[in-house]
Image (cartoon, rainbow over all chains, first blue to last red; front, side, top):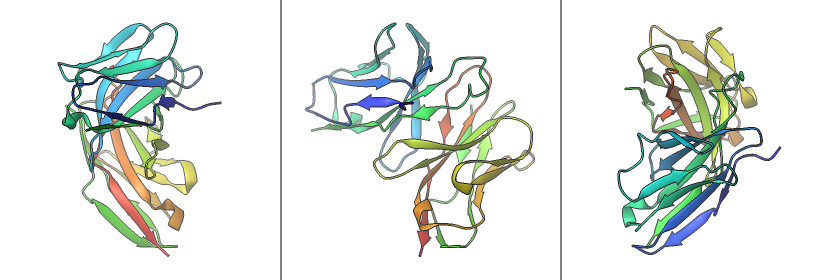
Length: 117
Length: 114
């Protein structure tokens, strides 16, 4: 059973470019979360999505950041007009559907390390 | 708002000795508590969780954690440390009140010395 997949693993963008980060949840999981980890920091919640719905985006910056989880395909975290401060590791996690005993367990992907030059 | 504190940035322990990594939390309502481990340039691996029931929970790789409601703590423990346990450990909390976001501590770097 494949785990959470993220790609690319490393992404380099120049200031002003767009970054697209992809996440495929574990098989059978219908909930996706995005977190950001700055150097020497813990993970900070960004957004929680189910298929075709954003459930909680309270951790998302107001501008330049967006996320989606379409009916088909991976979840995408999109950062427009990147700045140096966006350099971080971005982690995706997934969890099983509501009603399962493991509902509160989140399983993390390997992360995408974004470097803005 | 929920928060997690890991008071030690680094913990050093000799191989074979018991280890403890501390975590305290603040949350309104009943806490759902988690420990994750992160190896260099890797994602987080789930170790164990406390949702309800026994205060002592056992997890992967011989780790366990004790939930103490009066002290609002959830310390991670292992009776005998291995060099391969050296990694970054994160404690996390969820209020269980509908939003499923996890709030993480800043992490504790564990070094097990041979």
